[in-house]
Image: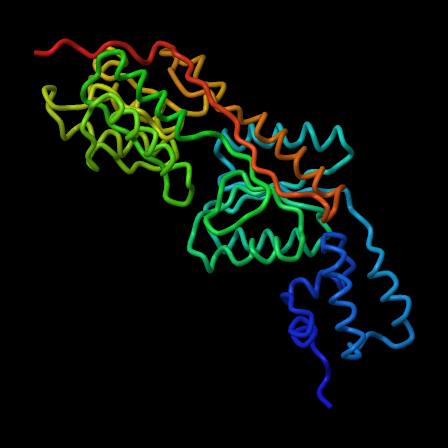
Length: 350
């Protein structure tokens, strides 16, 4: 008779091979009823543990220990947004006796999958994840975690994935930034949009569009300028964009996906001989500490990033300690517009 494999146990128990592996290694992150189903399949199939240790091994697997460690998986290590989120997570985790481990996917779906798998197989009790929004197949690793009862908190929604979620009301914050420029009298406003791997990009585009339409302004796709998320993106792509326009037709107001784009754009405009806010008003997003201390302090959306991390850690640790009795929760935090010197009335018509 062929030797019984992990795949055979997984098929009999109706779980993934990763779940069987987690049970074999005694990880505490598998839901009790799932663990029992896997162990029953092992016993029924006579899974080949060393026979002298079989009884002790199965007894140990039914009583795994926790590591009191949680993981934070971010998308970009050099983004100040995630640094602030991490500070919030660290604060709550430390106060409640948990060690924090941090890794970055750097925007690559397969890197995210590998990090999640590694944390899970090394006894990390649960994860806070800033997910990469990709196709459904690349979300399969998240579905498996949820099906297996592994504690997870997402920092933004993933289509088709239902679990604990805490997020910021991106659409309303973006709408507020756009309304600010409209109220100052700007008629030619564009939005410098973020990367496609985050739903935040589309949510902020929707907020921009909603504010224009509520003000009776026409919306067209050319008002959305794909830029990115980094200083260099704002500088290089912003420079190319504004070089194309003569004074009579160039935008006088820009809302940006984040503060890094706004700072990069500011430098580009200075090199083109344009002043902020006399010629062009700029609104950032996140309110990282730098924005209040620049030569031109920036108007920006204050995103409660530290609170986001703190509440995410609170939600995750409550889920870990409550076990499978914990019902998934969806929390929404609000952002606020901070008005500073980078925005003002548009220049007079020539």
